[in-house]
Length: 587
Image (cartoon, rainbow, N blue to C red):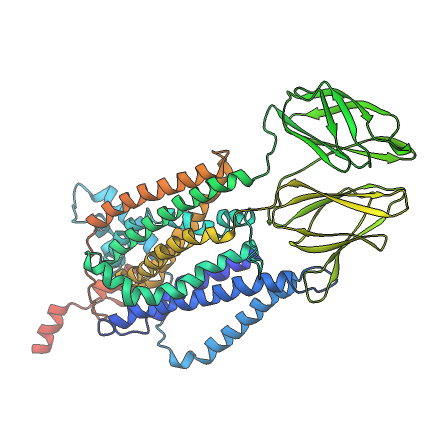
């Protein structure tokens, strides 16, 4: 599927903008051409806005094929709409101006460059030329040589451009990951983390007309009028957006789960008994403490190299038959591991159940829970989602099934063997443990324990960085599309648009390299790296833009084979000698 999308995008993206631009007569309609690229980008982001808004709803809120979600519908609706759009395009074909294909220009340009390099290496000393590409004129004709010069002249400006896309495309990765660590509760509605991406296309729909009406006229007052100036300013905005995201990340670090690092381990003890216990251990700084009934003890920072064992003795300080006796054993800890122990009664004996824990928040931002059962039998535990117009059973678990379960932020009624034991709200980012136990009067009790605090920083704090990034994108992307089209020779409009899209791919590759290198332990330093890289990159681009001089486009006589035909066609059809032809006509 991804391969088909790659092929499809590679065919559509370089050609659609160039095809639209070719519908205008230049230079008479230059003003409307600039407006077209703005409207084109407006249309693209209208689709993006609808998709990012509706697709998560189709996926999460609709149920199909006995699943809690409906990915087939989320993928199927865009697929059907794509087919409809193709049909509309075909119906409108008679209305378009369609130019005849000029062949594979990428191959022609590559051959022209290769011929120039080879010929120059042989003839440089005996046949000097003004430009190194002139050495391929005899082989490929004057027109292709001149157009290749123009192409390479523009491509020099493209060298720094991928860095912008490296920052921009992190809206769908790093910034969405930030959203999973934030609280989307607005009181009347809960924002899903991936729905934060809808802000970008929504702001684009607002900013495009504002730029045309207000922003560009204001920028012209301070001398920012030329396309390359706008590209530079757009890149600077992207760097500023990542400075803001760094500040947000610093605030979020306080809400992240604490995970054991090298040389560390963590210990948690969950008391499922209706008794208080005095705990005596040789654990550093925890030689003697009280473990309350239905509660949790945790120590997040225990120095461990490799593995370590610590003895413990638990003595009940409460009255009752179930609270009598002493429990002894060892805590077995391992470096960079989280070990948890559940105190329960099993087969008439009170003891500890060890298991490896994981308190990290969900990568989707959803709540995670685990059920720990201190029950006589494996009882059925049902989580009923009541935060909907039609309550339904979202999870069914067993009191002896201790697996972690990724849930959904909502309010739940928790039933044990059909008996309502608790009404509880699980929030975004929270990691919970529910202790299910039997009581002396043969009833069931569910006690919630928050292991990792839910997200507390509201997602709306992401809006400033989205606003600044979108301000930069509108100025950068639309200007870049228009600049690429207007600077390209007639036969290379799609080639240059394809090169513009290639900068996007290289930008994504930069992100992958930095992410896989894992240079930094903290995300904030990666944001700082990208912000600094963007500012340096725009400094380099400013120098290239200052030195850039456009090569004028020439009009070639199609009847002049010396200028337009490669050598194969010259040899096949021959060439006219204009002077000889004129003399013959005079006779």
